[in-house]
Length: 457
Ligand code: ADP
Image (tube, rainbow, N blue to C red; front, top):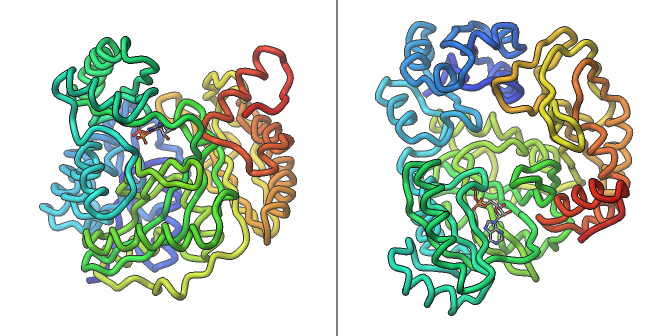
């Protein structure tokens, strides 16, 4: 079946990203927007635009009834959810399908399975993915929790089954604190997610975050597109991502990628997905699977030459995967810097009017952003305003080009995290690719206390 007109149920750079792939495939696009986004670039570029509500996301970008009504009024035949908002809402996917619209995403039952962390972990284990040692499912009684924690060894991590964005997690260093911290994790999880189910995991001291991009056709064929290293994080939010990971050998990439692809074949997974692992001492530990496109997908596009959104749309149309595993080549190196409208070191939000805008350019430089001079960044949404993605034949060349591109980016009127990226690219550990998920926060702490930027592991 051929999709003709896609409703893009998102905003900002990702709405634009989806629009671009759709237009290049000869398809029409319909933007939906809140009243705060009436002047946004994705609204200007889309073939049609429909206002779906006031600024708060709950009333607009999360308003299922208004989005479905917009799709019907505008004569759409498909919906692309982007990332965030409704992208991992299985009920939304079902409603889209019930309205005879094509859902450009995974099967709703897979969204449900992977959205519950206890179920996801059990499924991942059954599919042959290596797990973080921990409780077999939810923890119901405290004696059992003590036994499990003692057998995996302290420190342990209490995690919420419905958790997200790093919330509802507690590190337990000592058996005496276990009962109290499980209680706290439960009440926080109940308040944040309406579900107090928690489970236990071994707490890894200094891992890297390495994730594999996968694609399935929904009928048992699946491929992997290699990994991304997203270890530079602040408060569990990724800041800087690269592909390939400086820590993996080609042999490890191939072995782990194949394990991921095989898991997707057995699941008959459809569309794009990301399988996230912590990686420590040469071992991978599954933490979660995201059943959607990721913010950092362009680094994979840069090193494989495959347009992931195009691939998503093709699969939703019922086509076969556009390439076989053996045709995929990983060439060169790519890094993405997330540019936020924030103070670069305190991270205080800095929304407002962009007075000047010049995007970096030149060979192998890509800027995904809806910014333009005069644009007013609304305060209601995520602070990411641009992604700078740079490719180089090897990591060193990529870094040289990234420094050059960061110098060229000019965003006036608001503070941005460009200076943070420039400072990171002077750090010996970053240059060596020698960092764990703890590195950035330690570095920021050290910088705040002594004003220096000496390396911290
Ligand atoms: P969320 O869905 O809330 O983002 P994740 O399971 O993806 O939860 O974990 C978020 C982050 O928490 C990870 O990227 C990692 O930094 C940290 N983390 C998760 N599990 C562990 C663990 N077992 N040991 C150490 N850190 C962990």
